[in-house]
Image 1 (cartoon, helix red, strand yellow):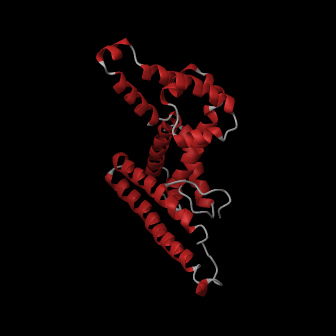
Image 2 (cartoon, rainbow, N blue to C red):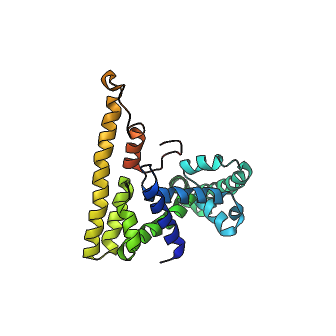
Length: 239
């Protein structure tokens, strides 16, 4: 197991354990990976031949295009777009064989489908995130300290809950898998009950009979419920 993965995994679980916020540690890992990859995409690595080959072929999804624009480095982004669009243009135009066999239109559609469904940054994140998920499962199996960190988590979003449970089934023996599923399920069930109550209390606060009552943890209940169901990280201004 590489230290390059164990360090960020431990850090994320420690941060979420010690935070007053309700956050999925796996969402935190993903967010850090995404931030790093977005910044790197417009950095010096963009001029490396292999990187340009991949960005020319894959491009970026809508979400990551928006994040790249916000980096305020439009010249680097424009240079990437210039060669990426040129690659698309050449592929969609096809060659003599395409024209001869009448498959030019099919080739263009296939190219468009491939470009609009691929993303250089998504692929980079997923490659590292999948290894970090595996690292978390394996650390649980032999690292007593990490096992305790996991048991003290406040929540896991449902998409990452599903992924880590499926991975654990493949990576752990029956005894350790049983322990793992119990620990994760205990966290998840407790948080599901809490978020249900928080959302209910949020709704009640709009009833005049409860307007003088405290909010407790319900002010960001809607945002947290959405993150539980779809994954993500609360903005820093959310408490």
